[in-house]
Structures are given as structure tokens and as C-alpha cells.
Length: 103
Image (cartoon, rainbow, N blue to C red; front, side):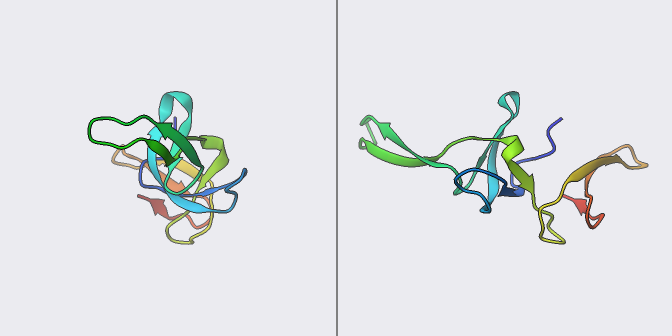
């Protein structure tokens, strides 16, 4: 089960962009990868299309999910999370540092 979701704030743990924070733009669950805004920028060559001009375009590439860690919204620190079942039967993500429910 993936514990990261779209629009979560994460920090990069290793690689060229180590220490940078960003928001998850897309989660690719079958490949265990995420695309984070402003992280892992690569240059892609594109051909001209009907409405677009060709050239070199900078885009965000996917990064493995093990290279990022969720940032808790309350304590604003990178934290591991646990999944806990409430009495109502709903599953929620909880920060292991401060115990706050992560929405």
C-alpha cells in the first residue's frame, strides 16, 4: 500500500535535489514512483505539432517513492507515518513524531 498521495508535501532524501521540498503532482502506483513539482527537472526534445513549436522543454521526471519522505503539516518536519484504523472503520495516516492526523 502506498502511503503517499497527490498534493502531499514531501522532501527529497537523496540525489541531485536532496533537501528540496515540493508537492506531489502525480503518483504512479504500479511503478512505485511519484512526480514532484520542481524536482528532478530534465530536458526533453519535442517535435513541432500543429499548435506547439518544437524545441527543448524542461519537465519534471518521476522519482522513486523511497527517495522522498512526507512532511508533516503540523510539525513541518519529515516524518514516518503509520496507518491506523478508527472506530468508524476509516483508515487515517498519522505522523509518528507528533501523533497528528495527516489529511
